[in-house]
Image (cartoon, rainbow, N blue to C red; front, side, top):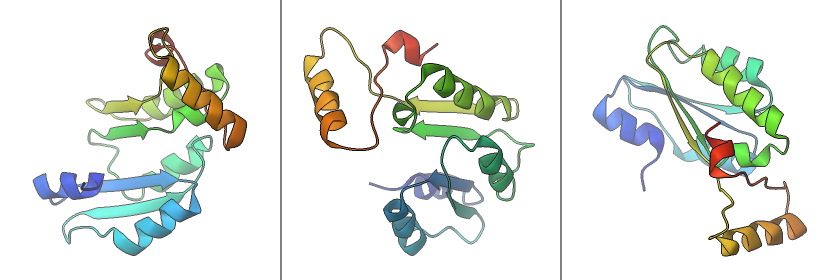
Length: 142
């Protein structure tokens, strides 16, 4: 499957993309294999989601915050344990975006009809790090 910047730059070669991750393996892969179109720009930032000011400052070097932006938080908010902190981080990022921007957020949810997901998350939290925090669908869309 193609990466975000490949899809975006295939449609609009001048697209600018900033990836943010704090996993050194992900960043090494990104820096080694992901290249931008000559017209566009792709950048990578080794940072934790909790450092919103640093992320926005760095992103402003690549993105034009005078134009709409797509903020994609895919499988990352689940690593923020405290609900208030998770909501606050997302709110701070969204509030910094210009009018016409969009938020895409994916998050594993807990529901009574999904016991296998609950069991998988419980297994991960018992044996892996960092811990995952499930939320109800209502909590994710709050």
